[in-house]
Length: 81
Image (cartoon, rainbow, N blue to C red; front, side):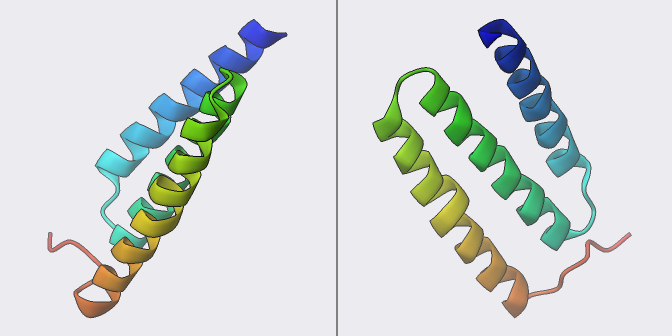
């Protein structure tokens, strides 16, 4: 069962990383990046590192997402073609 969880999480991490890199809408990229960070939180917790998981959740999914959203609010949302 643990192997299945690892495979699913790895696939989700790869999919979210590729999707963030290909996203043309910055808001969508930030939301997907937040999903990537939350997935990493699950991976760290599953690996037995709750301190790293809490740091990833607070910094990666929390503070970074808020800072990106503030930046997008002050600039343009879409990339120019």
